[in-house]
Length: 518
Image (cartoon, rainbow, N blue to C red; front, side):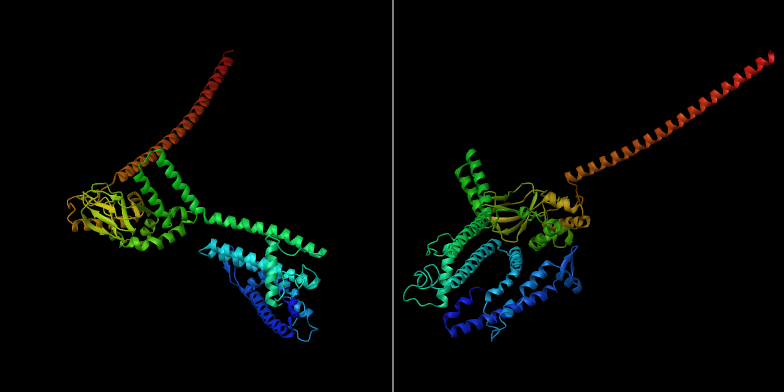
């Protein structure tokens, strides 16, 4: 704004078009300001967690707010008021009076905060904001420099803009609007960055302005540099944490004298994790969210994958919602065996990324290849009674390259099934059908067998029931004993009173008889 007026001596034609351009831009900006005030009288707000949509309440809250006062100040047409004597009202003599529009700067701050919150790349957005701050500060300072130069007098000495300042306007260089702005911006950049390779001041007011500029430059750019350093630290925080973990593993392997071959495999595994942005587990990332939001995110990420598993296809959504929170991501290196034939099955696996091979005992013969979306191990975690293989693995499964697998633990499945007895019966029935289809089911065996955990839980529940009954009997016995003691005490008191009365009666009789004898 203070950069408009100084260009009036560049010629009438240039001056007229410049004024017209700024007049149109001013009208557009003023219209946006008024439109913003209207929109704010229609923008709902939260009250006790609910969105208020009543227009009268919204308008009343806005009019009573401090922001409304700032908005009113920002739209006062001071430039029109002060420029009314001029023949063309749009061509105002003092554009600097539009500085009251800066009372809307808080809207810029609100926009930046909301964008930073919603952006998927907040660090990059913060860097852009810092660059924008720097450009705006340098621009404003450049405008003030040229404004002061004009107040002092263009070309009056070697510090202000003009022919005497050889740095600003050398010989054979035309004095244009672009030249004025570029040099002012250049001068402002050198001063605020404390480089200071500009012509020295001459007048006292020039010394004062340069001194204040240098002080502001030190403070402002120290703050900016600090913010940039903080942003860089935040951007590299994940890498630093990941590197510390890897360094700790390296140190451990060195102390334990792990072979170089195994050490290389471990380091390559870390490299794969970092290359695929898997340095943090899902639980660590999502633990800051409430359980409800964690469940919704997990449902969107894993629900369709879990629905593809044969035994879960007809299960109710509630059970699947429980299970998606139990899925754990594991990464296997090339050549790692996920399971071997004869191992006890405690997990079910879903291939997220990579390839697996079902190989023979010698590790050479390949029977099948499992790719993304494949599922295996689901029957071994159901504890199906009559399974000829029991809960043991029936094949060797090996990772071809780096493979990401979702793992569902057996205990997690059964803990969830306790709350869904109908789903449990359905899963066991499906499992029996699949085993029967492959002739791996002993049909004479009971349809359901209890696990060790279930037996232990039943015993625990039985003990708890006995303890409860015992506690109730003891309480009843104590209560009865207390009542009996109270009754006995009452009877003893009555007996003592009766004996006392009898003795008193006898003594009276004896006394009466003795008087009669006398």
